[in-house]
Image (cartoon, rainbow, N blue to C red; front, side, top):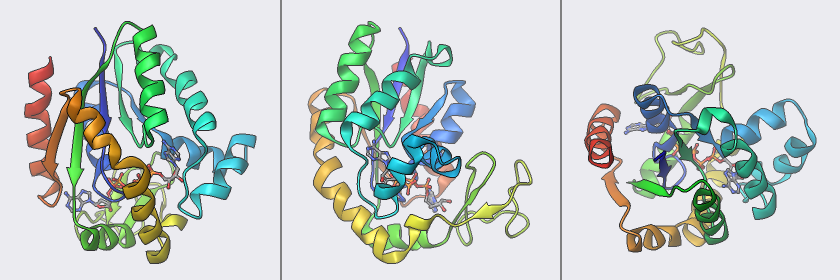
Length: 218
Ligand code: AP5
């Protein structure tokens, strides 16, 4: 059976950072709805123009658009053995749609790492985050600095700061998370797949704990 891992946690908890590391160590594709939206926004596709109206304000892109996009993405051949989902689902309707889709595949969500971090740390992390243009590699000017400021260690591309990482937008994103996404913690706890993690630990420590949890599902 394929393995589907769903990262849950507030903006800046470290979902993208850990999902990328796990994708490398498991060979499963990293599927980030935020990355897909940002790619479409930079290419100014129809989806990108629509998503931009929401992402820049820290609002959620409507469920029908996001669910349609994920259904298409998870049907691609590279997801045959599963996927590491980062930023999806974010609402109850999205979680139920994911369950229905995986049911069609004869599969289910296997593990939901829930990364917890206090609000003050989240704001500090996002205001210092730098992301690479070419592949979305993530750095932090203080907690995880690149070897050369402004340059990605992995592919040499330019590092940029996301528009939605302004302090006021970050605070709004945290509110949107509490209202729409936090209820999913209970949803997955009841299914017995929730795995709670202290996201204030250093990146390497969080990775170690996660890899140990993953062994349990294989
Ligand atoms: P998205 O891109 O998913 O943003 P997010 O959920 O707000 O999460 P972030 O990417 O901000 O944080 P992260 O947890 O990945 O943290 P990271 O690893 O980068 O979504 C953006 C927007 O798209 C949404 O607001 C919405 O509009 C739209 N959207 C996306 N999905 C959607 C959906 N399903 N439905 C509707 N709309 C959707 O780490 C943050 C920083 O901290 C980095 O600098 C990193 O280096 C550092 N760091 C990480 N871990 C640690 C650590 N342990 N110690 C110290 N520093 C650390």
